[in-house]
Length: 301
Image 1 (cartoon, rainbow, N blue to C red):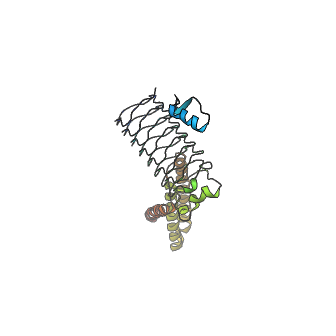
Image 2 (cartoon, one colour):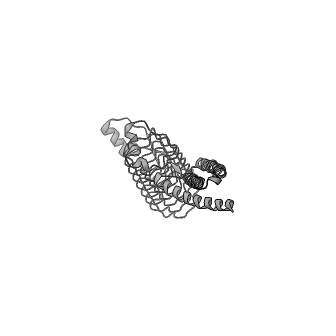
Image 3 (cartoon, one colour):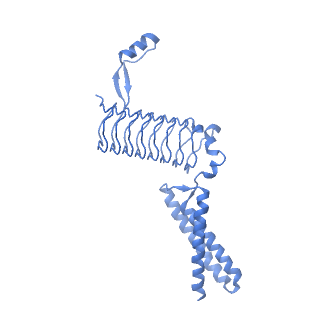
């Protein structure tokens, strides 16, 4: 039997592990609700008289039973915890899911049309066949999410994290807004239509491709190298010593920070655009120059 929570107030309620297959949550207040591991799968219901009337008019054969999905249309699920929830074919039409945790959730074939999923955590969610027409996914984390056959027509993915996502089978990707999105290790589609937002002039330069640690490493290496060259040419007696010392510093710094960068990248840390890379690198270079001058004076004394 399906549960009915139409316009119910479930704010801050803990409903973890419960079974709500085919439930009606339309327009319910579920802000900060805990729905971890809940089951909201479709249920089989007998066909109604209206469906039989349609059969008589159209002559189309119908089964005696139909599938009724759980319905969250226009519900407020702001900051709700739906981690690992079973939400296959569920309806979230125009629902509010800002800052919601849907990591590992099963949203296969779900209706998320015009839903607000800004800053939501959808990492490793199963979203194959999901309808995401005009869905707001700005700032959402879709790391490792499965989007095969999902429809992203006019979806807003600005600043979204699509780390490692296979985008080859996404439908209508060409009309989605991917500006400033993190596409690190994402598998790009080969079709021209689906690649259009990724290759659009101006947005390509804004694609986030450099980690913060790599930017710092670049700045430190530039700063140390520049200072080493300055001292080497200004004081010939110190040239061989400085080349040896600073050469080791440059190599050691580069290897160390790149190792840290690689380790952090494995944990899917955010990456930054070339503009931010320049700012961070310049700052790191300035710090490196100051420290290098200090080290030089210690050696000279």
